[in-house]
Amino acid sequence: MIRLFVGLEMPEAVRDALSRLSGGLPGARWAPPENYHLTLRFIGEVDEGVAQDIDQALDLVAAPAFTLTLDGLGQFGRGERSRVLWAGVRPEPALDHLQAKVESAVVRAGLPAETRKFSPHVTLATLGRETSAARVGRLMEDHGLFQAGPFAVDRFVLYESVLGRQGSTYHVVRDYPLGGWRAEDAAP
Ligand code: 3AM
Image (cartoon, rainbow, N blue to C red; front, side):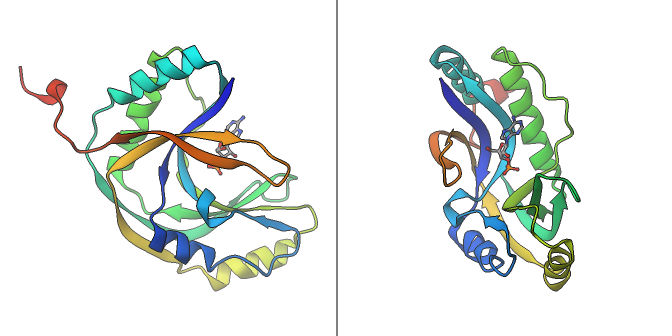
């Protein structure tokens, strides 16, 4: 079995900008910069055969390249046990278009459809119970104008996520180009 998700990588300059936000929040587990990514579709544990079907379906995704800008900070799960601090993304129709194509590809490969709305973000930290909501609020205020990019997105990737005691590590198992000419794009 292999634990997979589909996402976008962050270029080095963006990783550097994001990593400068880390620190100063007791109880927060900050993502290491090499883990920064934008999830397009969480897949979960699948066997090798399904992984191959997913790879083949993703390989057929044809979508244009685009640029993204990270914009602002936010959090999921306010007041709950599992809270996540994230950097947001300036709305970009080409990103939504790509995410919809990835979703259809994954469903075509036999996975159940995702029911949750797509909320593009880059996870910065998971917050422990002991992390003070006031301090999180202050950090978000201090960096309310955070922006990184714009940067070019010319590929998306299939990640393997390996769960470990110190958190997950992610490996790119396949990458898929965006914006290239493909036979199926051609007019009949
Ligand atoms: O992109 P982020 O960091 O928000 O939390 C996991 C991470 O999200 C999420 O998939 C991304 C890559 O691991 N994830 C983990 N388990 C999940 C699940 N069962 C999940 N998303 C949905 N359902």
